[in-house]
Structure formats: C-alpha cells, structure tokens
Image (cartoon, rainbow, N blue to C red):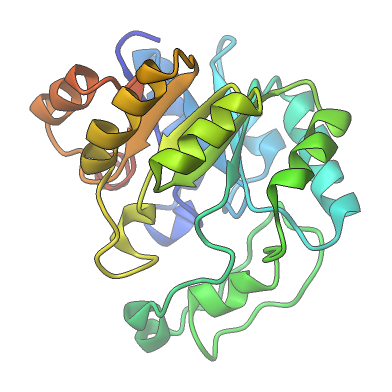
Length: 243
C-alpha cells in the first residue's frame, strides 16, 4: 500500500454516485491502496474487476448469509477476481434503529446477494437485514477456514477482550469500528479503541494487523491512528464524497 489507508466498504455505492463501487475501485487502484468491496454493493464483482488496469489489492467485506451455501458462492466469486482478505462483519447481527433510513424508505438491490426480496417500507437497513446471519459465533471461524484460503479479519471489534480472543484464534487481523456511528448510539470510536486494544495485545505478545475506521477526515487523523498502533485506517465517507 502507498500509505496506511484503505477505502472502506460502503454499501450500495450507486446511492451516492452513478459509478458506485467501480468508481471507488478505480480511485483506490490509482493511488495504490486496498479497496474493501461491500458484499451489499451496487456493482458486481465482475464489474469491479473490469475497471482495473493492473492487479489491485481487493478485500471483501462480508455479512454472513443465513444460507451458508450462498455465502460460499460469494466467497468463490470474490476469490475469482483475486480478492485477498475476508472482512467478516460482526458488529451488526441486528441492524440499529437507523432513523434516516426509515424516513427515506429507499428501495435497494444489493447485486451480489443471491436470495431474498427488496423492501422499501422501512428503508435500507430493513431491506438488508434478511441477508445477515444473527447467530454467528466464535465457533464459526473453523468453518470459514474450511471454505477459503483468504486472510480472515474481524470487522467491528469494540472490546479489547474480543481483540485478544481474535489474536489467540489465529486471525490475521481486526478492524476496530463503530460502524460509522450508525449502528449503536454512543459506541466508542476507533481511536478510543486503539488506545485500549493495542497495549493489551502487546502486553500479551500477541501479533496481528489492527486497523480502524470511522471519523477519518484528514491526514492528521491517520497520523493519530498510526501513533496509537493502527496498521491502517479505513476511509468511508471521505471516499464516497470524493466521487
């Protein structure tokens, strides 16, 4: 990576710009940073691959589908375009009360999902909830290892205890995140979590990639995160506004 940042997975990119995730993928490749493809995106894996000019670093942000066969299908399609890591999202087993979504009542179609219907009656969160397995547990990590050789990262860690468990389970990394402040009111920011998590990992001599996202708006925010021990920071809103 050209610097310690990556473009975060923001669902349904065409809600923000006609180019959707393809535009974000082009930008990430142009400046030499990874792009985390949202599993609930507006562009297919094949479309995202078609706009690349080289071999960019791609990750897949994954909500685990209640139908594991459909999850495997998505993993295989991601692998087919050279995706290197799986960011298993664990901070939204049930979506929060997203009042703006409920007011807007946007009808959505996540193109990489293989089942379900779309609903506009309660907004984006309600329409996407059916694609998320709310029963995910630590024991499921063995299943992920059995179906892919991609690196495994837990996205949405909020406690140092979970960070330690992730490292002890042999995961390749974690993303400290409060889901952009949209999942649960008053959830702590990634910077606050870094100050708690990194010392606990170091005290136990545990090593893995520790990333964070949320609230990164300026280069000084990146410096702060790196100084607190982050390997990289995710750019979500900043990248979407750049479209």
